Image (tube, rainbow, N blue to C red):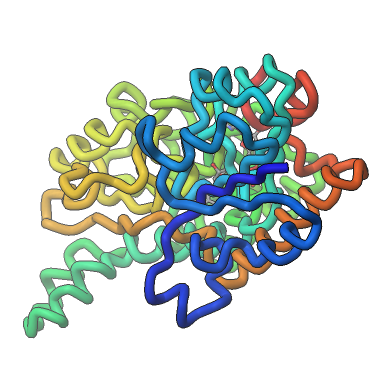
Amino acid sequence: MKILAILYKGGNAATSEPRLLGTVENQLGIRKWLESQGHEYIVSDSKEGADSDFQKHIADAEILITTPFHPGYLTADLVAKAKKLKLCVTAGVGSDHIDLNAAVKNGIQVLEVSGSNVVSVAEHVVMSILLLVRNFVPAHEMIERGDWMVSDIARNAFDLEGKVVGTIGAGRIGYRVLQRLMPFDCKELLYFDYAPLPEAAAKAVNARRVEDLKDFVSQCDVITVNCPLHEGTLGLVNADLLKHFKKGAWLVNTARGAICDKDAVAAALASGHLNGYAGDVWNVQPAPKDHVLRTAKNTLGGGNGMVPHYSGTTLDAQARYASGTKSIIENYLSGKAQEPQNIIVGIGKFETKAYGQR
Ligand code: NAI
């Protein structure tokens, strides 16, 4: 059987750090295991265009492993070419780079390693909220430049205490963000999600659900995006919704780049309507050198906390999603049932409610 993995290139870092398991070099640590069973294992980062390894090998691969950090975009056209494909495994969480409707139609299962990096991301969200609210990045840049002008930083630095923080999506990550925010004594914690939290869970973090999105954003000082990308969330945070944000709000998006309209976000920063934008996800990955969100700034020249997509690929997370990927493949090869929480698309149908209300 041919198993194809599209991973990110690790370069020198991966040759000197074997715990970078999710790289082309370290191959999720499963090459020996797969080859000992007679399988062919192709691993590459080449994913764009008809000559890419991805597009060449997809034609006869039975299992495709991809990662959200360097997404191999499995479009409906590629699904049509992938005549032998039976299983897509996302090494991580978030399978929007797969055309899920095409997978349903063609009987291709899509599984992810649910939960594998949700703490990693939740920690990054809390860090990003703090670095925006406290105006950290410009403060650090000032120090590196050799300058020292406290008031230039303090004029836009606040406490998180007393602010209203809301999450769009209160699933595994969103809920963990709320849990981690509790000791900060925020004024209120809010959430917007079509799936209400169980009463006890909402009570445990003292979170209030707001059912209307515009109403929700208008109450928040800080908004964090923690829902999957699907038809209902593509461009959800656009120029129209941003108008309903409080002036000077901060926005953190570690979910998926395309949930927030990049140009609308950059314009809202430039006009002062948004005070900051941070996150690690981009509408195209790798982000082009001139991507507007690499350099977008607020009116004081700060407010940008963007980094490459790495919040969910800490070394701790890589150990978890590499071993989870192996378990999923092991189950598939041995005909054992998959863990229900990992199944996004089962044979011919969606098994999760998180990718939109169907
Ligand atoms: P989850 O499935 O546990 O929770 C997602 C929640 O979003 C669910 O409660 C669902 O009802 C809600 N939701 C879906 N559509 C919504 C909408 N239109 N409005 C409001 N809420 C909506 O997923 P989990 O584990 O919390 O991950 C969420 C997303 O975070 C992933 O799908 C992925 O895109 C992203 N992620 C990013 C990572 C990174 O490294 N930056 C790593 C892991 C996940």
